[in-house]
Length: 497
Image (cartoon, rainbow, N blue to C red):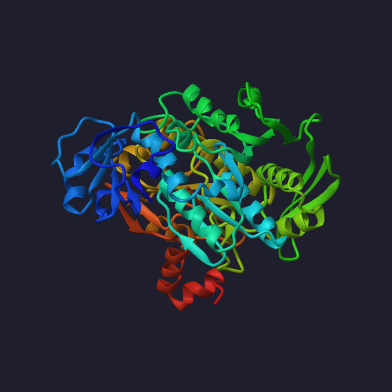
């Protein structure tokens, strides 16, 4: 399209050049620039796109879109915006033909549960004949397509591009995890979502490179509900009123509270006949019993949110129930079936409350021992480490402290912080900094009836150290460990296959 058409939804100043210039695409990464692509210079946390303008020009662009004053040759068209990061969303939406207007959009925000709820909703929609795409922590999925993503909520350009691709492939529904950071950066300020879900809120994502206070974190979460048509809220959350304050959307609620419109009744963990999960009832706007193939009370809340939004969308209760009985989520209480003597589960729990949910659920199953392998991420809240140490010390028979994603921190320092919480308990622990060796220790020394919980990374297939992501998929790592065992050890441990 013409540059003039691309800019129709933003306020801009033409500093130099021609608005009739043909633009085939836009890019915010100078490495992706070539002739016909306009370069949008954005300011990030560590990198400023304005520093790469010369590289973008070298790669062939004839148009740069900036927010700073810049000096370039006269043959380059320069457009100045007030905020290139915020306006990137408007530019991308225009470029891809307003794809959100052609889709039913379901956004999910909250500290915990986003990935599980989004997976549940996608399965329910797919199973009911309403094929859906999903964008979130684990990547982008639709039909047989998968794209890896770095962030829970990708940049607005990428999301609008995925939307258009999905539409071109017959996908009319999009389920999307929306992070507090993306709301803070106003990536979606020009989009009105059809449905938005609030799961819960706890002290998390407060610290360097994230939110400077819990109040900021909470406020950013609430922004989603000022740009949706229908909001579905966890009424049991102490922050419910903060989320619904000043909203104009229709309000629906779920939870165990008597006032919830989708009221969660008794929840029972079930582990029999090959089924591992919960039985739960929902009353209020519907009256039905459900079986959900993921254990834990927190699963009831996740399922409650999925049931509510899908019912409001008109999906039959029978269809919803059938899908939930067979749902599975990678890295969320994911069973890795390797032995007939002990159990191994992988879960993403990386902060105190989530870890307590997982460990308390496993405690109810009365295993011989709970052995928990975990670390904590670097360049994140230290309080998270104290909490994880205390929770694991309280519930685990043995904690194996190791590395998670140390990022730019020394892992020994991270473990020292974990020990602050661990030492508030009488929990037993060992320290094995190499994560593969830590997992191997848990498996090789497993006892009959043990449950081994490998926590913190879940679906991730990498380990981030000093800015580099090294391949590390725990399912692959477990298989490598099994391949290294002697036949004698395999027989002793009851290894399957």
